[in-house]
Image (tube, rainbow, N blue to C red; front, side):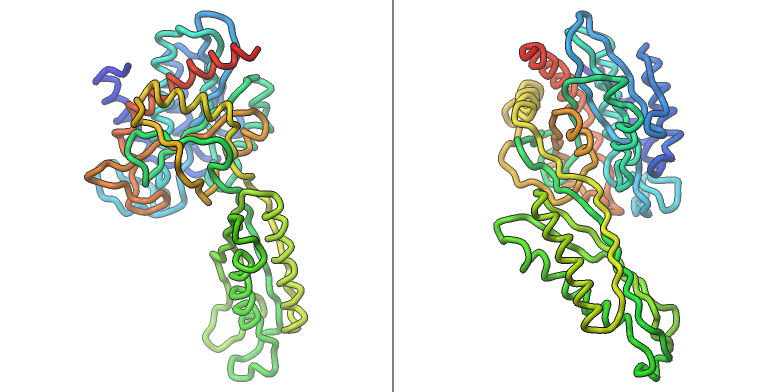
Length: 390
């Protein structure tokens, strides 16, 4: 499917992307490189969708339905710890989640599909910006992704440390959790640290709040449900001898069900009101709904599973695993068009991958070839399945 020469080219391209990471909505070089590669394959390329997103169109030899395949392009605002030749050249910016590899795999599939076109229908190749916390999927949708490129199904793929390299994991129902953010500003009355009785210590109140927040998942959500509420930031004060007037507490909530999301939000609000009564401070909650949970429709999960088995063999499919409490804004696309997200294992037996979002992480280039095989098989199988339901 991929010649040795093409695989070498895709590996070099992936490492070039890794060396030149770009943050959300700033993927100018990345998008331009991808657009050039797609145009060289003779494909129509539509740029600037949702900022820096782009869509390439592969028309099959015969008319039929349409399916979308999505890869993400953005990097993370973190410092890389690797020292190999293709390590990030941009301080404080790193491809720590494998989006460079996702883009390379979809480009590889683009070449195979464009060369053969032995299918009925249309394949839309979606290269999305800003997956990391900034809602690039929503930006593309609001910019007309599904009206300009009407499709009956959409699929996404994410590499996954912890699974054997090249193995596809997919199931019906929850794959990844919904994700919200919260910020609580606790305001008291500042004072000299040596005379705390003359003020009202917002820091002590905020410390109690951080502890109380840990009871939400354990005491306000059924133990039969899944929930995570994590405080990730605490900002207060600049001097050793000053009690700060204001403290900012920030964090994230993860869940699969809307009822759990509502319980978390209500409890956060209740804790803030209780803090005000107990400590005489104000506690202003800003709760930000971000990504819904990724839930695969059963029919489309089955299509992806069959494609994985056909492309990679029986050992290349995993259907018994726990969903992840991490989140993915591909959920926004699934809210508009049915489809499924799959994980592609990243661990070699002799060298397990570093975790995602870790300074030592690097995309496993051994995934490019099986990833391309899977994408191509999925495009064919999804179009055939859609044709049978029309």
